[in-house]
Length: 229
Image (cartoon, rainbow, N blue to C red; front, side, top):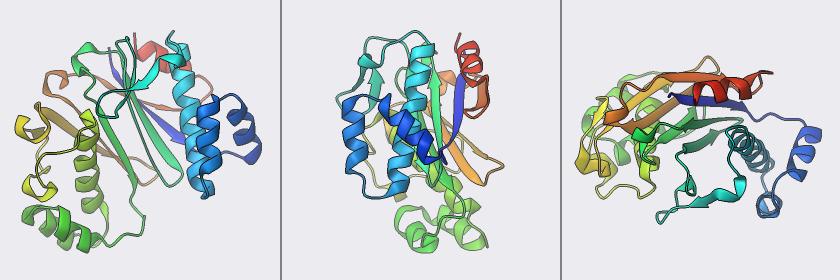
């Protein structure tokens, strides 16, 4: 078993988007029609198409897609854990059949060149130690490393945190149980495309191998299937 991180370039042509949209269920089509921002519509179509392609390849039905009591998407009745995140024109889908994950996988991606008031956000949401790292960094890497790690924790179980974001740190890889309800392990990687990706898994899944797959590669579904065996 492995954790597979599927990178998705959502910069699809209008023809690709229109064709893919026809293959999505009515509920997703209706969501896409409500988006006023073209980038958000594009990301929805691309990510939902990739997610459903993976589900079908692994032998499941998209009719099993549902949400848990905390609003976290899941595949009903199946041992399959996944989490999806997007930023600008890129997205990442984390997926695994490893039972140790126990529906506790969180993934977050951010484009490091995105324009945000990093200092103001760090003062509001980061601990003093985390904020100092951001203040000393002339670029944005430290900010987005910390931000994506916090978001990955938030997304790991869908319930958010019972404590303020600035009351705990994500500088270490291990996350204590009192923060998210179970001990977690954090990992972060900056991809060549200048996107920072962080993911959180239960501590007992710390040795789970991680494999990256580009959804633009011709054999990407074959690779996902192989890694998920």
